[in-house]
Image (tube, rainbow, N blue to C red; front, side, top):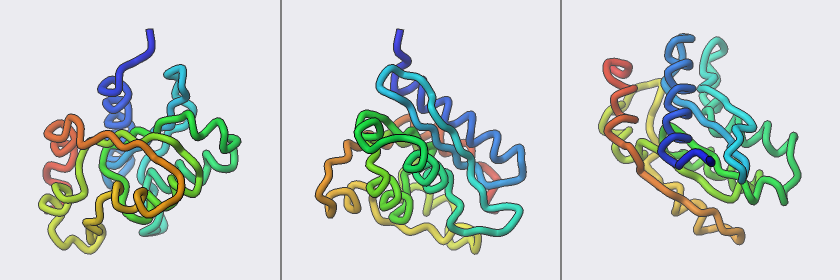
Length: 157
């Protein structure tokens, strides 16, 4: 039986926990094919280099665009522990990924992180970024938002 969106999203939460265990910010993303198979997974890559662009979703979109044909990616879903920021939404769009499911909204993330120097949250909904494009990207979220928010407890203090 194909896993549900909630099950797949919780897997992205597990990837985010792995990022935290590895000393990074708690963000994770997975790419899932139409049959429910996890094709790629990435955690936040801020450390060791302090790369502010190494968001899990951006890293995943870059790898996906190199590994799969656009027709394949159009049938895939990117599951993310948090809503893709404007940068990541752009990368997802350009990679051609057809669907996004996320946990924590950018708006709520901003209330958690405040103006933390390592995450000056860009509160621009991914739906707004995708709506500006010529290709449809289906968006589901926020989903399991309280669960997603728990991963950030104490991280941004």
